[in-house]
Length: 258
Image 1: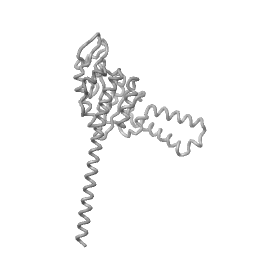
Image 2 (image 1 turned 30 degrees about the vertical axis):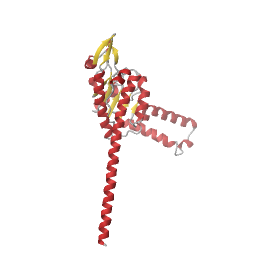
Image 3 (image 1 turned 45 degrees about the vertical axis):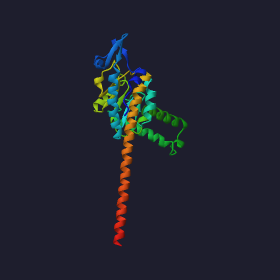
Image 4 (image 1 turned 180 degrees about the horizontal axis):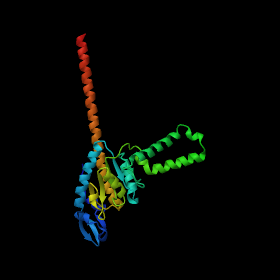
């Protein structure tokens, strides 16, 4: 796995924190200095923490489990939707529905509702209702799609949560903690890194900074998925060879018996 590049993070502005007056003292270990009233994040610490987080993400992906990304702030939502979709991992880029994790059964009911509406469009149900009723149902479907679209295939709780802004997504963090779901997150100088299991010191407001971190995380997941596929292919190949060998042995035994 390629290690995070210090120069790339520097160019992306990952090191720019918030104004000193807005800082959270818990971030002190990750702050390099203050410049013009703004805290500067120690990118050497960012590289180390991002590398640690990436290795953990790769292992989770390799195990076949799901990692849910949460980024509802304007600067991050499009980046996350585009990048994470490449891995087929679930993501939330609209409002976080309270109980997404702690009341997962209810969320699953809403997903099933989407499936039922889709079925109505193919089984002829829509042909037997008024245009107004059909429009109301489709509006309901669109609303569910905006909120739950990317998690429609999620049949069980995710194995981990990756969050862009832990202050904004504090409800998601609390729900994950309550269920002992490991959390990964960008932590800016105005956050408490102790709230997450894998903090990654980084600017969580600038688009380029967010993209740099998300890209590396997604690449790690892709690598984990690739290793999983390679392992499965090898196991399948071994099984086929074993079956062929057994068949050949059986045929030889039958031939001798004749």
